[in-house]
Length: 378
Image (cartoon, rainbow, N blue to C red):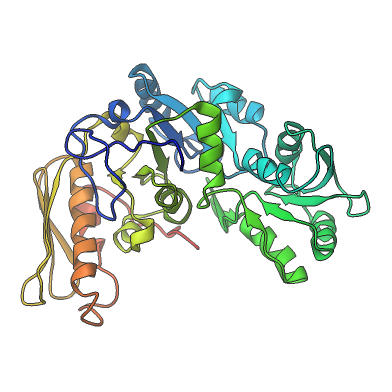
C-alpha cells in the first residue's frame, strides 16, 4: 500500500507487519492516525450495532483518530451506509465511507474508454460508483457494455446473473467487488458475493479481477479518499480483513465480534495472522501488552507465552492451558501466541500431538468466551 507508514512496536515506533503479535505502549487510537473499519461483524451485525461500538468509536474519534468505514459490501452507496451508521448513533458522513464498489469502479475506469457503458450485476452502490468516473450503468448484455462489474445485492436474481454471464462470456473485462463467500447476519451466515461470482465463473470459465479485500485496491482507494498515513485495519475476518492488511503492508486489529472465533485465529496461517487482538472495539483505547514467547527447538519441551498476568502453554494432547488473571485481551494474546509458537514448533516434525490444530476449548470458559458454530468459512 503506497504512502502508508505503519506504526507499532514497543513505543509506537514505525515497524513493518510481522507474522507474530506486536506490542504497542500507546493506545492504538493514538499510535495510528486512521482506523480502516470493516462494518459487518465489527460495527454492526444485521440491523443492530455491536454492543459498545458507538461508544468505543466515539472515544477513538475524540482522541484524534480518523474513522474510515471500509466495506466489501457493494450493495449500498456511501450515503446509505452513512445514514445507517447515524441511525445506530455512530456519526458518519458519506466521505467517511469507502466501498468495494468505488474501488471496482476505479479499476473498471482504467480498463475501458471514457464515457463507456458498463454492465452492472448488482445494485445501486455500483451504479453510483461508476457515475463518479463518468461511466454509464446498463443492465443488459445487449446494451453495448465495454465491461462488467459485479457485486452483492440482496435482490440480485437469475436474470441479472444471466446477463452477466452472457457479457463475460463475450470476453469483456470483468471486475468483482469482492469474493466473500459469506455475510454475517443476526440470524447466522448467509451466502455472499463469492457465491454469485462462482455462478458466473461456472457458466463462463472466467474469473474476475477483484477490487475488495483481501486484494489491495480497496485499501488503496481508502488511502486516496481519506489521506491515511498510519492506518490500522480493523476487522473480524481472517481471509479478507487481516489477509488484506498483510497484503497491503498495514497493521491490523482483529476483533472477536464477527465470524472469526478463537479456534480460527489460533490456527491461522501466517498470511492471515493479525498484528493485534481484542475482544471488541474497546481495544482501540488500549495499549497492546508485550507477549513473551518461548519456542523450544525440539519436542522435548513445550512452547509457552506470557502476557500481562497470564501464562499459556500446550499440553501433550495439544490442548492450550491458560492460568493467571488479568485483562481478557491479554489472555487472548497469550493463548494465540502460544498456539502459533506450538504450530511453528512442529512445522518440521510432522503431525503434532492431538492433531493438526491446537485445541483452545479449555481456554474459552476462563476468558468468558462462548464457542460458536459460525466459525469462519472460506
